[in-house]
Image (cartoon, rainbow, N blue to C red; front, side, top):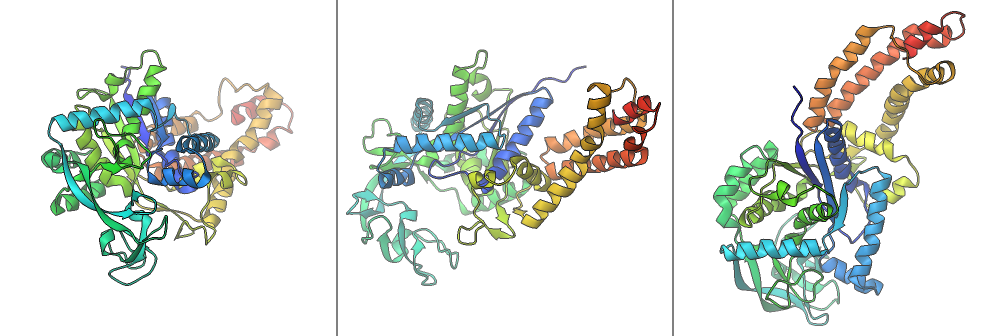
Length: 478
């Protein structure tokens, strides 16, 4: 009996349209792409969408520095991002932008439906304000001395020296990182998403097998601390979507960014016959929805996102798959250490398939960090890809091409060896399904070792020199 075709929608986190793709980003996109390719090879309907995260203060300020409009900046960055992903063979079915009419529609819809149900509140807050730039300052645009350890030149939300967290008002001698002036404290009315309204639902969902165990355990800590209301608005000037009926107020970038998953899929539906948005997003949908993300954005994706969707009468994710960070030679990527490697810089020197293989050989289903050890990278490419996989083809393909017109033999010399390889398929497929790529790679390399041993034993290069052994040579190489 044939297996039912699964309907699967898959996303990766949206890269920010304020800078280039680097190899740390690529861990996630390669991980997702491998899983999507596997699902498509199994015959499932698997759709992979993504988009540029194109709103926020950093984009507005960078565009101003470059003397261009924000739209020009994000359009240029989109071209770069798409080109980099294509070179690394990341096969999106659609790549869109959050600065789109589809995203505006869904942001407005999700906001309106949650507001009508009482899940949006408003209150006045006090914020740092730059009187020169005439704008409220995000925490990361305020610098000063850490109130805990006294370290200088620290951001307005946490200290990179001692690790302390604090509010911008606690900084000693704070200054705006934009103008250099001391910020003022001013009041502004903001919109808040009442996350606590969904506490019971979220506890059930986060403990219901939709997350990795270590992620679910981490969320229990946040539940214990209490779910806080989430500020979803920002004041003008701001590059983003203005909140309906509230001039001068904009949706915070983290409000409309995950909605970009829906917008990108909607954009694809509008261009694809037979692909219906509601089939994947209505509450009773029988399709599967998976988000691949980094462990640093779990809070947004595992709490706010499911709650917003439920409050707006959309389905919640089937599962969220988190991964760890990438280190290079055991250290965080750093421009000063020369370990901050952009996708473009890598492509200028090396084959992208090497990095895809190396990441696959390191990735599992957990949230542990993975390390790009450059010596190990070279050794694995040479020993595994060249010394094992390519070696099989290099020792046999030439004979098939030159002696047998690119045709395989009708019979092989050792059917039981082929059966062994075929029988391994189910276990390897299960490893791909559960995202245990490193284990799958190990199993495949063991098969490659077995194949190379078979070739060593049969010595086709010797057969090729002996008259009358062509049928045997053909069978062995096949």
